[in-house]
Image 1 (tube, rainbow, N blue to C red):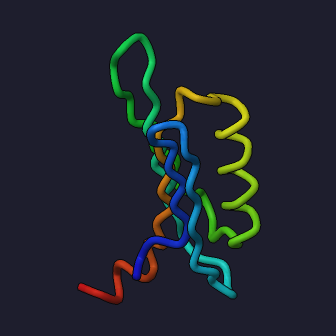
Image 2: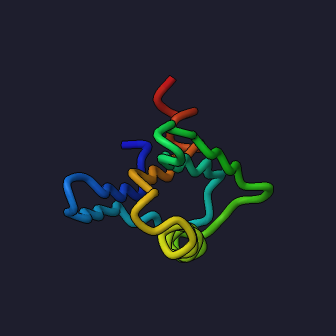
Length: 85
């Protein structure tokens, strides 16, 4: 699976799942934020291979920054996606 972390804030329930990756990987983080009734997508690609711990820390930062406005975060392992093609 190419997703390594998934956070969801739906109906007041916050759900988080993760699939640990042991070695650094090229990542893209997609955050779905509702502001002023509109859903915005924030994409943050890694500039270098990132560790799983770094991705978790970034997700926690986004959760604290956006609070209830944050609907979902998905961290994708781009290296794994390349292998699937």
